[in-house]
Amino acid sequence: MVLEWSQGGKGVAGHGDPEPGSFPPGRRLPASARARQQGLARRLRYEFERRGLGAQEASEASGVPAGTVEAFLSGRGGRFRDLRVLCRSLGLNPFRLVAGSYEPFRLRLHHLRPRDWLLQGALEEVFRLVEPGLPRPAHPGAAGAVDAMPPEALAAACRLTVFPFRCRSELAAGFLALGPRAAVFLNTLGPPERVRLALAHELGHFLCGHGRDVAADTPATLADEADPAEAAATRLARRLLEVPVRDPEAALERLLAEGRATILEAVGAVAPRLPAAAFVAVHSLLYRELR
Image (tube, rainbow, N blue to C red; front, side, top):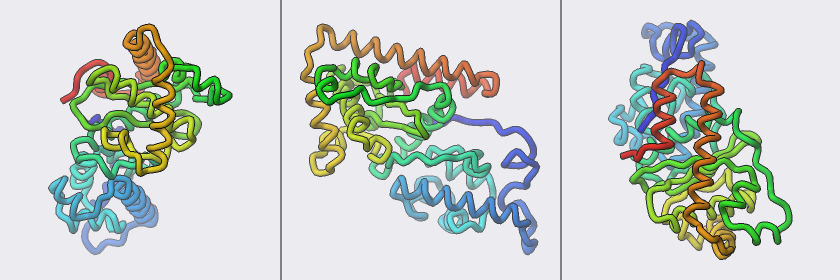
């Protein structure tokens, strides 16, 4: 699933500028266009690095010729329709990349399959939309207090918004942060005990201070004892899950309902500026099982 965004104004950037590569051959680009192409190249290289991609792999995943991919990565530009196809295969918003209204996430995606890049891209785009309306998370206090709380209560104490989605995907959970605001996204398709483990693991990343810099979690990373960050998050998660809860499934469902309400409230604050399709996509992410 990929969110589709309309772009107002003339040109790609919405400021009357021509599309990358739309100048006649042999004509020198204005300085502003050259700078924009170099900026696009830097942002695209970073997103390739997050995914562990080279030009050839991106070409095979998207169908865009490798030479065209190399041109974008080197700052020589190209046709916007090629960029759009390339971005769609990576789960990226091409308008945001071109216009420069872009703050990069540090969450690593190198271990995900191409299909999961699309889902991750949709989650990241929604987070960018709702981030201004989310509460700022905070550490709950002393270590003893952390050990006394189950993951649902701890998430509430940390003021961490939980973004639930349901999808037959290896993407189990992850931690998204921009500036002081953050959210945990959580795949709720599966047994409640597995969902609670993924939630506790993300809380472990947050409390250990490495939530921004780890990989989006899959069953493999949740069980990874070799990676120090993953192992530390798992140890803390196990302690949280040992705290007795009268009805863990009900506690989890209450937390998910609160997360949906927070996300929809934040979307409502920006709804007048959104195309209707974007609002529908957000609602689908929250309430429908994606395929």
